[in-house]
Amino acid sequence: MKNLKHIYALIILSIVFTSCSNDDDNSSTTLPAVVNEEEVITTLNVRLEPVGGGTVITLQTRDLDGDGPNPPAVTVSGNLQNGITYNGSIELLNETVDPADDITVEVEEEADEHQFFFTTGNNLDVTTTYENFDNNGNNLGTEFSLTANTISTGTLTFTLRHEPTKPNTGLADAGGETDISATFNLEIQ
Image (tube, rainbow, N blue to C red):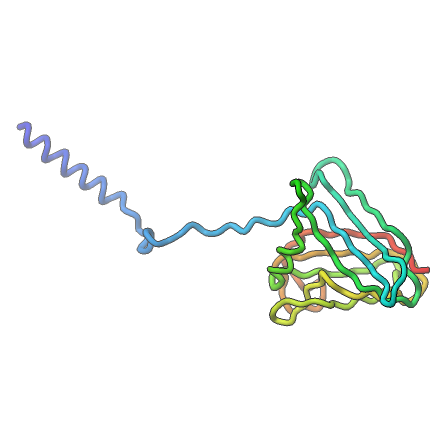
């Protein structure tokens, strides 16, 4: 009788173990999916250097509390000059850590997954041209040129999209997710 109980126990255990098998054929070789976390961007710095020399204009938006209660601090160091072309560069930082992480490096390394867009508003008369590109020749935009065409005032918005459709005709058909968007009030004298 004692042996019969052991046999029944072994039969039940074998049924339990075989019914709990994994149905995935590749379960022993499947690795968990890699999660590519989005970058934390607290600060966007734009440097506009006049071609041929002159006063450098800097634009900055800084939001150290992210979605917190404090609005971003936005600064513009001066006015653009009518008829001048500027070499532009963008720097992205994560200042929640010390020292700050330069997110620009990651964006440029993953250029095929990122693109900056430049949008004007309220009659600001500027022309922007992309000066750096991804490996497929599509626009990236951490380097650009900006020409101040005529005396005017308005806004210039810098929008970084993650995984946009490339090529595209602009922000309207780019898709993807916005990593950061910052609007600056500018004047051309």
